[in-house]
Length: 99
Image (cartoon, rainbow, N blue to C red):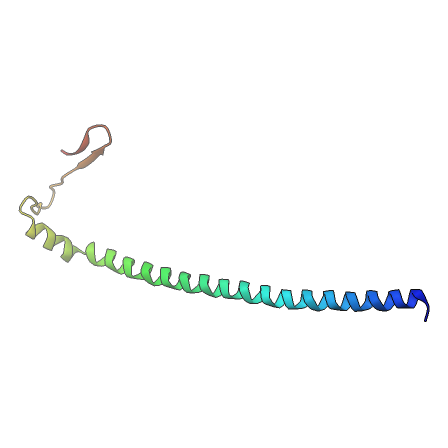
């Protein structure tokens, strides 16, 4: 057998070995990335559910019945009649004040 054929056989074996290694490495890399994506999807679902709960809480706390209950429980607050309004201005320089 000639030297060139021996070199070609050795190079072919080396190339197949390298390609096999790269294929295995790609499989492990794919699984790692896939696990990371599943983790992100799970986290996204958790955030979505928490967001839905917060939106429901906001709608409950801002409902007219809840606002009326807070006004009735707080002695400093009182219901205003029709045509009456209270303007509250927020100022960063002077703090919070009501007019």
